[in-house]
Amino acid sequence: MGGDNWKLMTLCLLTAVVALLLVLSIHLHQDVKYWQHLEEVAEKERSARISWEEYSEKVRKESAKEISEVTRRATQAAGGKDCPPCNSPTCPSCPKCHEPSCPKCHDCTPCQSNEVDPKTGFTFKVYIYDLPKEFHSDLKRDQKRCVSDQYGTEIRIHEELLKSPLRTLDPEEADFFYIPIYGECYLFRENQKSGRDAMSNTNRWFRKALGIVVKDTPYWNRTQGRDHIWTFPGARGPHIFKDWKRNIKKSIFLTPEGDRSLSEQFNTWKDVVIPGLEADEEFWSGKLKKEEMDRDIFAFFKGTIHNRGGKSYSRGLRIVLENLLKGEKDIVFAEQTPDCNRKCYKRMMRRSTFCLCPRGWSPWTLRAYQAMMVGCIPVVMADEIEFPYENSLDWKKLSVKIAESDVNKTLEILRSIPQSAIEEKRAEIEKVWRMVAWQKPSKPGDAFHSVMRELEGKKKFMKVSSYTFWN
Image (cartoon, rainbow, N blue to C red; front, side):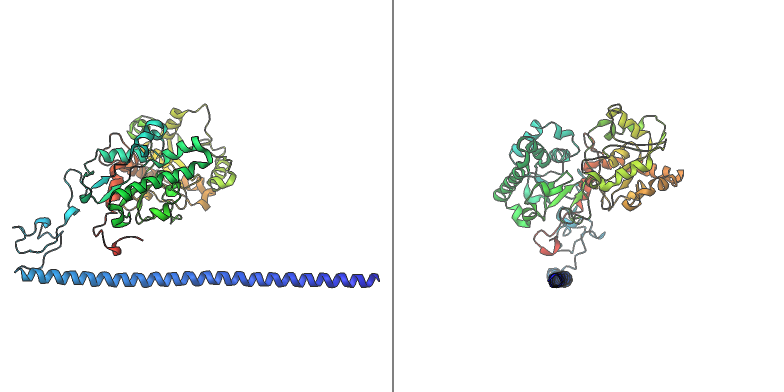
């Protein structure tokens, strides 16, 4: 009898094992099919995108050819000749090319706002929406912290534009439309007032502002907001507006978070990376940089190392660096302590050759800009970061970038840099440090003017053409 029971148990066990293997096999097959399906979908999307790009290029070429032919016939009919391009040296006054400087150009299309304005040095104008004060100045009045916070660029840019000759009161001549809304400041207040409802309240607040823009003027719908500017000065970027993808995805974002891995919230083709705000005058004026001090600290960092997020914070880089640099007499790598206040922090940074800038929760950090303002070489440890002005400023010449996977080699890398290379990087910093300094009042060459120069590159000349805009 016992033998029969054992056989029965063995049979049941074998049956269960076979069933389990069958289930695993089915799931494995389904997983393989699922990933194959994803690959097929991705391939179809790639093919569709290539086809669309080829079609778009064909349409652009045909349109250009047709426009050229129409223009040629019109000028011939008028007894003239083909009109030279707007930047042609034979027609220096393109908007007036039918006048003596180019007498036979009867049908030259004006350059319009492509001419440099002698007052501003720029080729564009900005219209600022007149939103109710609850979206901007009331917040500044009630939340003093917002003015000097590193996210205070949303206030600074608005106020600089209000008094800038770039501003136009005529929306018909505007190239860009600025929406003055202090989102980070509002969210900060809502976190204090509403707690976990803060994000939902902020979302409704953004939608209310957008509703005013869309309802009261025709300019948003004319381009689906592509020539409209929003400032998102925090690491979360547009995510503080939960419905941003549905409502403002095509607009231009001014944001410090140039994380190239976050393609949804940051698009390097349409958006502009801006420096965070350092409101301390000793930094932005260059006063601290001019103080006579020895560079007796080889590398410096003071800030959060052990966060409650554990190794998720900074991807564990700061903990690794703390262990790596422990015991190095000419290196400071430590948490903030009561015995070293802000004055102490600034002067230790001023005394340092290298300022370590490991990522925190996100890639960007104000330290890199503070370092430049005191002549310290930023050492960046954030793989996906995109810095401001990368199209015009060679960051390799003024900083050191260490891959996150090479953080254990930090000391070896820095010690191997020759003094001549250090001096070259300092000289490069001296040329460009004002580009990351929000000076007050703003001056040519500082952060505001540099951001405006970047914005100028986003200007589109054919407002109604779907082929000249991002999707």
